[in-house]
Length: 140
Picture 1 (cartoon, rainbow, N blue to C red):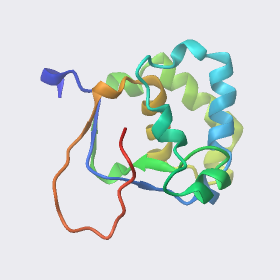
Picture 2: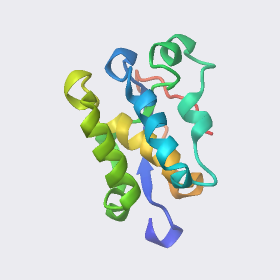
Picture 3: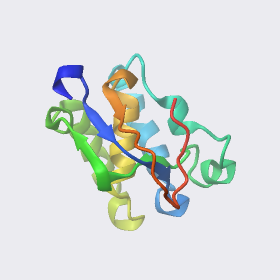
């Protein structure tokens, strides 16, 4: 990954249960109002807010598509997770209570942070064809 300037790699992206992330996107928008400069130039905002496949999910999650990188098979550069952007974002989310009250998991939080704060070119999909009952969400 270092040789190719990648920050994060994943194998599967799927939809989450919108009831478990209902306030994640509004809290994220609140954070971004204070830190608009944290948005990457080539971010994945379209992917995070896409409503073409499951508009009901996007509506129930208050604008978040619920697409996320499945964290069971991920690899990442720890510099991203230790960055000021991510640490401040995580602290903002933690103070809101969503981890406790809604069961926000690592996967949607990682996905939203990467989708907003990192350039698309630095996120790699390790695509390997295999039979899976999981439905893959669109990748932009």
